[in-house]
Image (cartoon, rainbow, N blue to C red):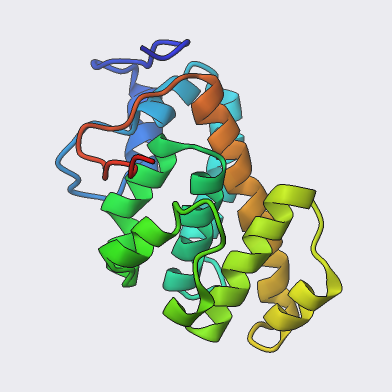
Amino acid sequence: MPRIEPLNPPYPASVDRALRRWMPPDVPHEPLTLFRVLHRNPELASRMFALGAGLLGHGLLPAIDREIVIARVTARSGCAYEWGVHAATLAQRAGLSPEQLRATTERRTPLSSAWQPHHAALLHAVDELHDTARLSQPAWDALRVHYEYAQMLELLVLTGWYRTISYLANGLLIEEEPWGARFPGP
């Protein structure tokens, strides 16, 4: 049980509208538990929506690159909740295979031979940011071969955003969605 109980239907009209905005149309399940908890503070939820939706729906990174970053950040943060939500939906649509998704949960940086060079550079950068909160010049240079400055900025924000989401889900003890992908065990 999460530390803060999520809202349950029927929702007040304003919350119902907001939750529908947060979810893709025609989804066969309730809004995410995380969203329903966040709407205990609608003003905060509204501010968070702007950045989260912008990164997911209007970003400059290719969808597969974005989902590799999200999977690795959430895996390294031990956030089975958010990893499972993305693995079950957006990561698969972006083209990540089940084997690649599983590899994002390995403790060590997944072997670069299993990834295209720019994906290996992304994984290394996420690990370095996770471990040191910095990006070394070699890691920066490896990314710059493949990405424009605007994409590099987005990558850093995306990494930090999903670390924040991981802190939120983990701190609230939010359990995995029943339809989400199961986080691989040790």
